[in-house]
Image 1 (cartoon, rainbow, N blue to C red):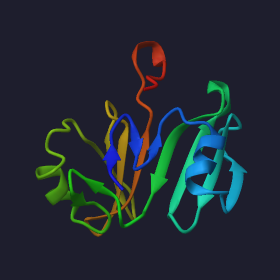
Image 2: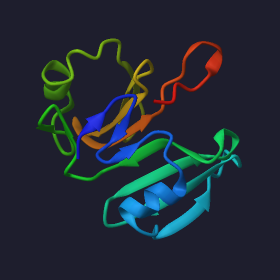
Image 3: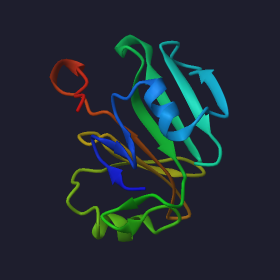
Length: 143
């Protein structure tokens, strides 16, 4: 399942509508509204270890993906449960300017330009979040 910054993950592309996602993945295991964003609804797929966020204010388009699926790759390199430093210094070295936040039990690495977040525990990537990038004036760049 190839991570495609700014575009999507595997067969999922930012801007897809719920019906298109359902054609590819089937019905979600759970649908819920985001706790802090009433304008977003989330589809959870347990077997794929994935959550998909659709934006109501953007005609229900797929705008954000979070996944801990071990099949995620970046230029052929596996990501989940891999050392974050090795990935950042290797396959992901073309992505510059990572912002690191350290919390009590995990760290995050964010590249805002590509809108990628790597969640890390024990220096290993536990899950990946990617979103549709934003251009000037906070307007989404739909592919």
